[in-house]
Image 1 (cartoon, rainbow, N blue to C red):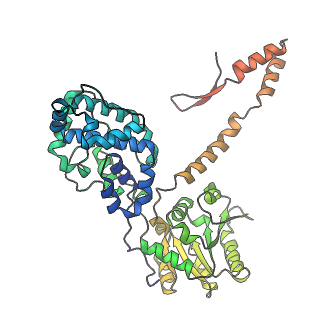
Image 2: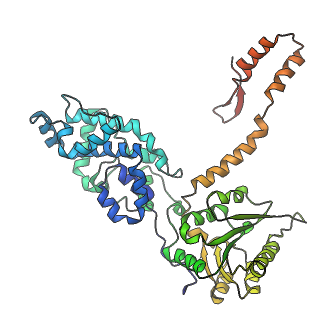
Image 3: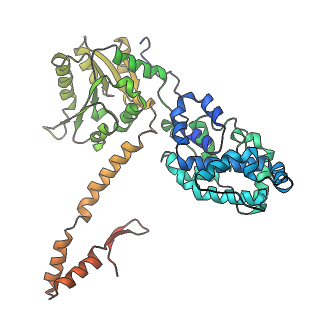
Length: 449
């Protein structure tokens, strides 16, 4: 590792969202694969997804009907060749038929086919929502596939005319619902695509961390650090590091490259986020969570505990190298006190000043920033945390012993009632109770009338 300051390295931009749109609108597969070799897994997943395949075929047929309107009409009327007998449509018609969608109709012309295809796209578009990350505005994505007033032949005619006249301004000359302007390849990468898409709705896509990733140089330096040392541990100062950003680092790094890491040691304080307890959900690396108690409420002991733990790992457990995640300048004392140990430091730019960076460079200690890694890939991590937090908050609100409630009701009312009547009341009113959230977001228990 000759370079220690990676801040000037180019950050590659993700393409998953843009390429998913490209696949669904019917872009040629050979073109997609040849120009995006790193996304082979994505294309395989899309090709095996029934709803993605259906929508791709529908969009492909719609675009080809618009581009070949006259020839298609002539073949239907004069040559008695329906779509399933015309070469340009055969494969997509067969694909739809395999998925129980038969679009072939007798005595149909192109406009009527376009009405039907638009209707089918409207019916199936929601089924591909989960192919896109939740941080992308779904309504914007969905709008690309829905032709305005797509059941009106007059509207279809107008939209087809606009498309034909400006087809070179559409991605790969495939139809989408947008205002055609000269933007080059709008599906070049996620940053470009989402900025253009949001702009069409007078909105702005600004969370670049979702679409940019650390450079290959940064990742290679991390892999080399792990390979070149006998044993490596990731040590995290949870007070001075971001759980979500570190989760992104672990997701973006090649799992085969980091499998030699011995374990992750989390030095945590009771006042940090509970997200740290879920880090083991996204990695196969063993996670040791050390929760550090406070003697004084206003004094954290995490730094001291972490220094002691790293020293013990080096001298007692023969751990030779450490990936240290912290933006606190106090970690320099740890590094300087173990001159024979190897350190790689992961910081956050906004929390780490130039003095400590310069000290790391002068010491020959490589550092990189967890800010550089793509944060758009930790949906499951976030959902697990959110689900747990919601469950813990509502548990005490709605957890009721319904059998005790039933007995208390009749005891309080001093009502004589048979066991059968009691059970009927329980089944009808208590077992059927449900939570109801009103328009103001207030949640109440609703009892059947």
